Image (cartoon, rainbow, N blue to C red):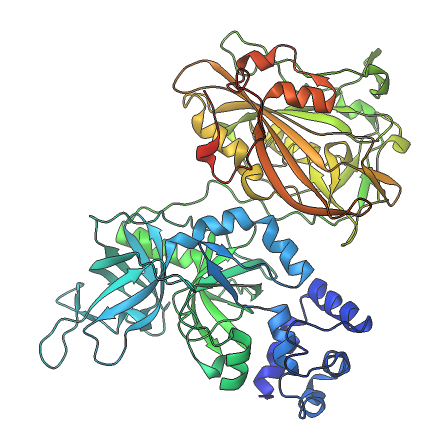
Length: 628
C-alpha cells in the first residue's frame, strides 16, 4: 500500500501538532495503537515512520504494509454514525475536539443523505447531498449529471435511458450501519447544475414539498481559514484509491461501506484567490457532495467534491454556495455571527496595571428585563469568603465589567458566579483578545497558570460566555468581549465549557423571550465542595450551575429556570476521573442549597418550584425543558 501519495498524506496529517504529539507519547510509552495488534504493527515500526524523512518512509514500512494505515486510522478516522450519533475516536485529542461540539454536530446529521438513482442503467446511488435551504439540497455536478441534463434555455431536465425511461433520483436521509430504516424523499426538480467544469462542482435540487424535509444546515458566511477544525459527513463507498489498496480499505473501514460516517480533520489551505479549499479528512468515493462542517459552530463551510489519492481533498467554499443561491433567489439559513474558536489551552495572561480604567464599568443591571421586575445578584451565604476590595472609595465584593459582574471566592481564587445581561437583538462579533488579570484585586487571588495548559491540564472555561456581553454599540460590544477574557470569569475544566445543550441554553431562552426585546439575564457558577479534588495545587470543581431569567413571550411573566452540569464519574471508592458533561434542569432551591447561595425570592418564578423532588433525567433535547 505504500506510495508517494500515502507518504504525502502522512506528512500532511503530521502537521496536526496536538495529535502528532499524542501519537509520539503513545509510541514512546510502548503502547499499541488501535488495530495495531490485529495488523501485526509494533510501536517500533510506527516510530520509524513518524521519525523518518519523507523520502525514506516507503523503505521503512515495506515489510509492514499496514503501518501507515494504522497511523491514518488513528489520526484521521472515519467514524460510523448510528441513530444520528457518531462514534468517539480513540485519540484523546480528537475526542476532545469532537466532544466539545458533539451536540451541534449531531444536530446536522439528519440533514445529510445519500442520493439514489431510479432507472439508472448501472448505478443504484452516486453520492451525498445535504439540505442547504428549505426543501433544497446541494450536491456535486458530477453526481447530478448522472440523472440531470441541460434543457431548453437555462432549464434542466431529468435524463432518459435508451428505452425512453426517465432516470430520476431521491435522497435517503438514513442509510446508517445496522439500521434498515429509510427516509426517502423524491427529487422533484433540478434547480441548477454548474455545467462549466472550470467553475465550482455544484448542483442544487428541489425536494418533494409534500414530504417532511429535515432542517437546513446553516451556511458559514465568513472566509474559512487554514487549520480550521472540520468534520465531513457523508457516505464513503468501496474505493481502494482512497487508502492505497483494497485490503487496507477493508481493514480501515471494517468492510463497511455506503453508510453514513463522520470524518474529522482540518482545512489545509484556504487560498482566498480560489473558490475551493483543501482538507485532510478521510474520504472515499461516495463522499462526493458531503457537507464539510466547521467543528466549532456546526455551520457548513464547504461542499466536498474531490480527492487526490491520499494527498489532498477539495471542497467548494461556503461563500461560493451562498453566491449561487443568491443568483437562484433561494433564501438560506445564514448564521448571525461567527466567533473564532478560542485557544482554550492558552496560558498567556496580560496584566492590566490601571484599576482606574474600570471606573466606567457598570456591570450587571438588575432592572435589565423591565416589566417592573428586578433580578438581584445572588447572595453568598458564607460572606466571610467573598473577596472584597476598594473601588471609588467604597468597599465592595462585586467586580463590575461591561454588561456582567463577578463575585470571587477568597479561598478558592475562583468566582462564586458570573452574572450577565444579554440583548440578543444587538449582538455583535469581534476577535478574541488575550486573557487578562484584574488589577483591582490581588494577583495572588487569581489563578494564573498553575492548572492550565495542554491535556492533561485544564482549559479555562468561561462562566459568562464570551459572546454574551458583546452587544450594544461597537465600543461597548468590543469591551464586553474583552472583559469576558478576565481570569476572574474562568474556571478550570477538562473540556472547554461549550458542549451540548449547556452551550445552547442561552440561545434557546432567547427564542422564548419577548420577541420585541430579546433580552435575558444569566447567572453561572461552580459548586464548591470539600470533596473537590486537588490538581496542580488547585481544587477543581466538577459541578456547575446556571440560572436563566427572561420575560416569557407567551405569558408575559418572569420565568427563572435552573440547570446543573456535572462531569463527575466515580470509577471506584478512591479513583476520581473527569467524565463527559451531563446537563439537568433542576429547581432553583436545589442550586441554592448545593452552591451555598441565595437568589432572593427568584425561586418563586421557577416552574419547577412546586414539583415534587425526584431524580432528574439528563437533558437530551430542548423539548424536555419546562418554562412554565
